Image 1 (cartoon, rainbow, N blue to C red):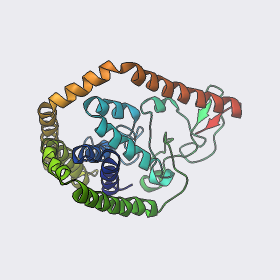
Image 2: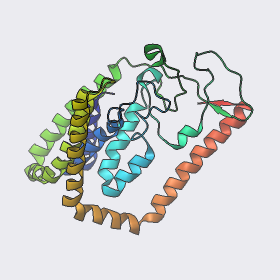
Image 3: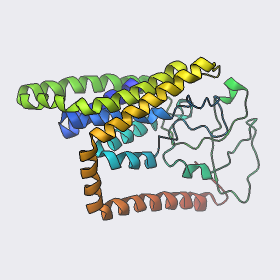
Image 4: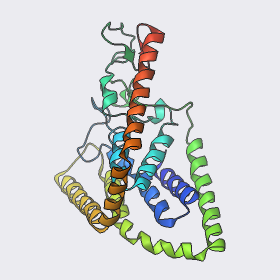
Amino acid sequence: MDLPTHATFGFAIGLLFFGQPVAAFLVFIGAMSPDLDRDWFVNFTASPEEQRHRALFHNVFFMGLAFLASPFLAIGIFLHMLQDSFTTTKDRGCEWFYPLSRKVKRGLYDEDKQPQKPDPKEHVYFYQEDPTDDQTGKPAVPWRRVYGPALNSQVLDRMFLFGSIIAIGVLLTRIAVTDWSLLSNFAKIVPHLLLLFSVAILLGAGAKLGGENQSTLRRITKISLAVVGLALAIAWVVWYWTEVLANLESIASNWVPIVSGGLLIALASWAIVKWHERKYKNEAVV
């Protein structure tokens, strides 16, 4: 999914379910933030041994970290991951349980894309090898990602994008007609502009300054922009600290259902893998 699609979908869902511009704006920011894990800052190659895009910030642990600051940010991250999981292996999918998912080491094919014999010590295998191998000439490694049902050729992306734009227009019109006071709440998004600018600077630097050819000036520019982006994020935390603290107090007072839910999800994931191991006897393909 493209970044504009993630952003508009997040904002539309925020308006639809919460009806508050501030909440929708935070969902909007959260829906863009997972793509900060693009391999631009440390200059990874296109097919590294441990490729981290769609992994490092596309996982439940990053979502949980964001939840500590604001549940609306976490919802945006969840929506981003959900959309990316609709995509197929060609579109790269999403790695929900990184880094735990990296425990699954082997694919059904070797780096030359030839079938390899099962290892009696391994019970879970990946089916798809890294598709960027054909473009880079470098050894492929197994993907550890959740994939969707079909190659969408950006049709699904465009449907999400334009559907979200229409939904935003309808919802804002309804707000303007039924309750003008809600529109005044847009002024309350001012503190969150710091976080938006932080994410925008880091994403923009990644888009414009990525690539393998890195001059000294290019590296200095990337580092400078990274410092500015991180400084803005810290400034947002300081400005928004009262709300963050209130959110943490709410979590602390209701920690039992939150922790129980997390443990149940982990248990269910473990049980699914064990069931597949039993079903396939020798190995399960994920």
